[in-house]
Image 1 (cartoon, one colour):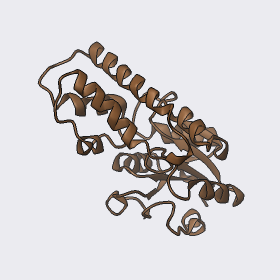
Image 2 (cartoon, rainbow, N blue to C red):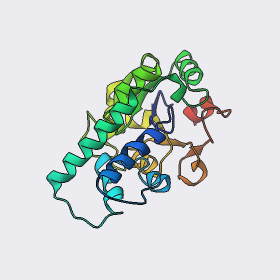
Image 3 (cartoon, one colour):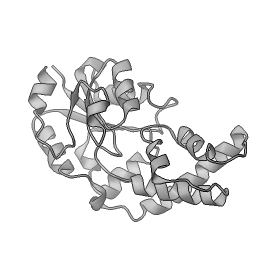
Image 4 (cartoon, rainbow, N blue to C red):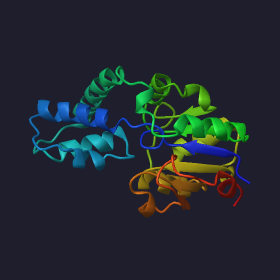
Length: 216
């Protein structure tokens, strides 16, 4: 029987896609890279900051050293953190606080498993930091999804074995990470039917039989 639920953050509990897009677009414009679109932003779903930067730079013709890339990634994060100052509970996706409170009442342990280093800030700004038991984020790991490290760290923080955990994800890389970590997975979000999760639901606003999933 599973005892813990590990939630990805962006796209599962909150939506900051627009903020990420605006920050990457500002960087692209400064670099003279034309045509960075929200469709390009979709390609950055569920991957690390450096992999996201590669999506932006692929639209231009200039090559950058690893040191220059690190500077650019940090610059984008600065823009993103500026935008995060405007974040509040309105960024929460439908039914999120209610779902977390009910799962806690049902006795499940819960953690965040996000590659974002900004996860603690987002949780505080949206008011749900107190509804989870642990946070595993980009500050804790050296490898991004589809490597399972972020979820393995989350499970360890909860004091649970991987097979005792369910991962809730909206990206294929996250579902793959769950599988590689020996965890069951629930795919949600706009691509929920094609992510390859063990279970799927359009969103946390949909009726989900958590008891069946956790006991199956």
